[in-house]
Every structure is written in structure tokens, then in C-alpha cells.
Image 1 (cartoon, helix red, strand yellow):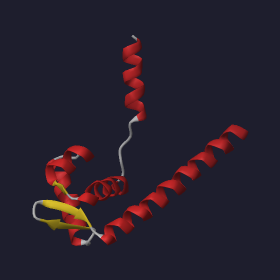
Image 2 (tube, helix red, strand yellow):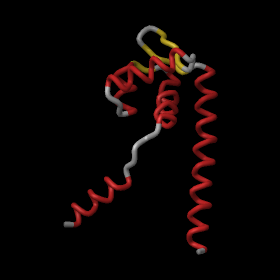
Image 3 (cartoon, helix red, strand yellow):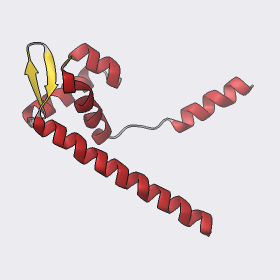
Length: 104
């Protein structure tokens, strides 16, 4: 019974990642250059999903292809930093909302 409850809690706590998280994760992971398979496994994407993200990031200059590796560009590193700032602001906003709810 406890195992079932723990499993249900874990499922409830999981949430869908948004595009920004996925893009940031890919760019962060590819800083040192990674092949498609490694990116797909680490970021937990299907092959079609990976293709969409890689092609979009290549087209925008966030990634470059070096041999069989995908490497994050300077522009891509700026995107990672911008995403980190947005994630932090979002987290702060959630904390403020939680405190407001506790006060009421």
C-alpha cells in the first residue's frame, strides 16, 4: 500500500516540461559537444522530438554541428543564461504567491 501511495505522489509531482526548459537543457548539455543519441537519452526525448528541437536551434544559431557532435554556440549560451534568469524569476513569483496564500 505504501509503495502505491509513493508511486502516485511521484506521478503527481512530475510535470510536463515546457519548451524553454527542454531547449535550455539541450543547450546546457551540448556545451562540450554531444552526439544526437546522448542528447536524446539525457534529455529524455523521442527521436522525432529531438529532430525538431535540434533543427530549430541549428536554424537560429544556438547550436552548430561539428562532425557528428552538436555544440552550443555563444548565442546559445546567452539563451541558457536568459532562461536561467526567467526560471529564477518564476520561482520567486511562486514563492511570493505561496506566502500570500499562507497569510490569508
